[in-house]
Length: 494
Ligand code: FRU
Image (spheres, rainbow, N blue to C red):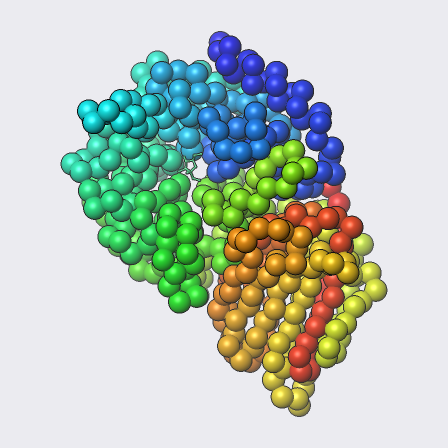
């Protein structure tokens, strides 16, 4: 039985979505059915389809009381909206149904675990938000909140752990058929820590231990953890708040962090080996992964950053998901590539080989705002190393967004200063890429309001949104010095 609050939301979104034309949205990146979207939630494969829920405020294009929006897909590219799955309609989640995850129980029910937020008056008279973990069970469309909610609250926390910051549970099923979950928490020192919980049946949960703690190294509070095995490594994905920059690896503000290491199942001990950023661009946060039926580990993130909310007056929706990305681990790094299902959208192949670039170059047939374009750049033979190479897109006389590469420093920069934005926000990010010989491979995925650049076969990724008018669909190349380039470009047609 859905509540009046949920019924009202469902009626509202079904009407409101009619006011958004298809071409006012990204074509193959999921955007909210209406209103506001943040983190991906409950990413799972259930009854033959991928389910993706999301942090959702249908009534406004700004963040507000959180619901769970819901969409399904067979190929991770074409999404169909389902009615909102959760609304903040119970005492334990009245201030919001925050992020969480999903899995399938042996009896076929779809289990969601999310953070229920409620307001509570403190002894000092202050009203604070208390966060606790809650369950909902359903069939892929209708979800009933569990009568025993919340299933994890302040009583389950270790000493010093804050119940004001205790959220974003990510569950998984272990090989022995029992369940585990990690959740983000603020420890006694004010910094993030990941708590590990266990369950025999997915319904009754108990605290195990602190799996991994920040110790002041990566930002302050942490959000949206994920934990999984990948190519022989144990991988933690974390979204830290208030990062301090570290060389060119980490930037200020909300960031992304991947820590790899080993995990001893007997003692639940994680031993850290490496750390790196997940995405080096401007907008990417709170990613969540799934293990697909064919064994691929696929990650999707919120293609946004809390520090760079660019609103335009006309926009009827806010927030987009990234392209789902296949993960692998090799050469001591996390690699990402767009899911192979995207290849099925490729049309109108245009290819150029060995194009000399010196100054500005435009090529017939190379333009568009929904494209997949692979570039391979190298120095011209027998010439000095070029000083700079750039590719500009979403371009007309007034606007463009660009990636530029300085081979001597191995630095790649994304710059959307000229994308039409009127805000003094971060519009550039730099990233140090591998190789010093002037060779660079870039695969750019454009989808109306965003660009994702997969660098050197997915060794690094830079993602950014851009709300440039769609008429600006030009693409040009530039070199200071002499470079040579191969280009293959496809339109992506849904
Ligand atoms: C991350 C986050 C989560 C929280 C949700 C609230 O972007 O702050 O920690 O669950 O968003 O919408």
